[in-house]
Length: 163
Image (cartoon, rainbow, N blue to C red):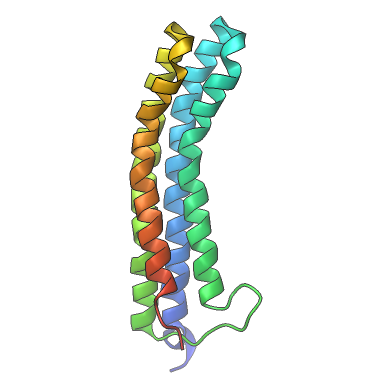
């Protein structure tokens, strides 16, 4: 096969890596932005709460890191990082694309909702700074699902055989 059709497997695999990075990164950006708005209001009223609210604002940023990790694993798998580019048939490329989707989609959704949950937890810290530990549990619960999606994507990409 010549032209793009001969490289269709690579195109699908690259699309998977891009989807993992783009979608999870967008979720993190949205979530960090939502939490940042709440954090800014709290710090304006009480600058001493900066460290506590910053930690909560950063929580939704992990989804972007997870997507980036899956993207790097995928690029390494197909030989784009430091190796020779693998010959990938379209079916394998589609499997790699599918394997990247869990962290991409769950990262997008959980990043946004973790940002919303972090904003609510920041409200708890604003009113009762001594309840920081309890407040952290709420956004951490959303993180659980991003971690599960990360594991599925890593296990899936890692176990796909590339020629």
